Length: 76
Image (cartoon, rainbow, N blue to C red; front, side, top):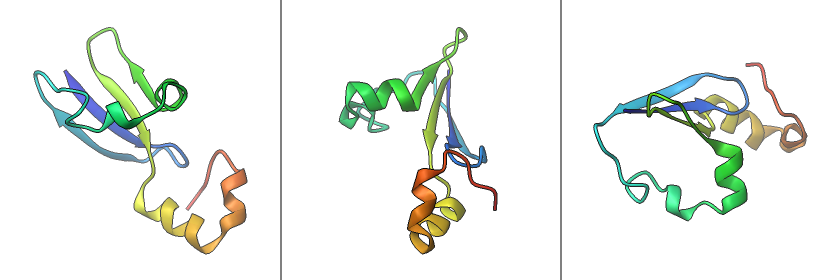
């Protein structure tokens, strides 16, 4: 099982954790609301977990351009 982090705005692969077993508290999933968990986390049949996050470049773009928050996808 692996956990894959991808930027929700540009699709960049931020990183992966290759663990046999991971507790949801170890990666902070327990802090998400049910709605956020449905939006940000997906599970594959092979046991992999995909988590939508934000990369440094998109975070920087959003900080400089707050109106970008209205966009689902950013290109940088």
